[in-house]
Image (cartoon, rainbow, N blue to C red; front, side):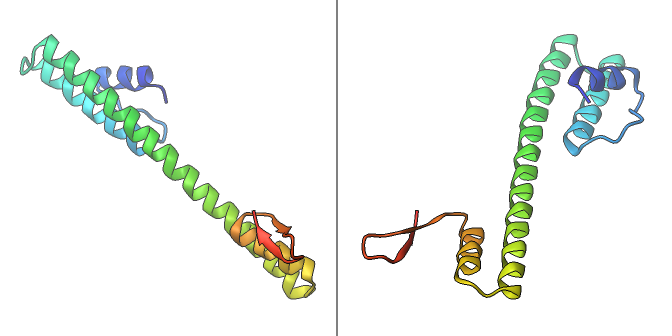
Amino acid sequence: MTIDAINKHAFMDDPPDTVLTCPERCLYFNLRDLYREFKAGLITKEQGEKKKREAVSQYKKDRDALDFAEKINQNSADMWQRIEGASLRYIRDRTLENADAFMEAVYNVKLKINQEGGETTS
């Protein structure tokens, strides 16, 4: 949901009927409370605008942190999927190629031949 859409729902004191992420929920409740405080005369327009900018800034930080955490989780899931596939291939067919593929899956690097004829990671 966009910031503008969340803002409209908060202004109307109308919770969105869609599932919100944690950062979206926090922004909605922060803005809703700001509008309530303003309507009750507890804060000035200038104070409300300042707090709204702060809430939107915090939302962006929270959204970025959530996006980063989701990326880390996806990378971890992808890594374990690679490892699982490589280990199953090695269990079924214990070849040097499958062992190398397993090492590549675990360490996410290609093996290369060094000058002495042995393998190293790159």
